[in-house]
Length: 213
Image (cartoon, rainbow, N blue to C red; front, top):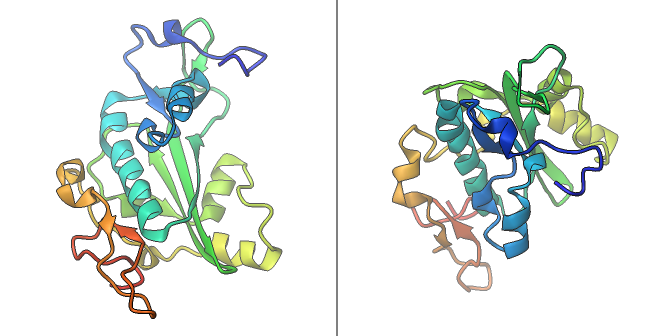
């Protein structure tokens, strides 16, 4: 990455390591722009991942969050490796191999909001994604990062301290979800108060968005 003045990892660091070049911001989210697709392949957006993790549970998490972006229209996503002292490294640049990766998601609309976090070990897993869900507060304690400091204090406290799994849509999160045709978004079949067809898109098999379900 030419923008990292101190230097970034490169292809040689991963060659023969046995680790996947795991994206943090997924390439599948970047199709809206040639520039964004190009930039997401910089090594500043890549971290060593076990192949079974990258192609399994991590891919399921990426698909889930992508579906949430469609369902809720506006979400904030922060994702990365959990870095600490003493991790094994690969390559001449000594790229740390994380034991865990995290995601935090904020759905913040009309001064209301909800949040959820995930801490997922860098290894194969067939466990449901709900089993890795934690409060954002827990991810902050685990990583030492304050994720949404610009939220009003009381809202930040309420959103980040609470974990309500039932407040989120968990469809298509099984190990076979990547084969499900229902992950393709389509226009909601619901009607607005004015009698027009809802313009939101949904991945729900019912054909209705979260407002009209």
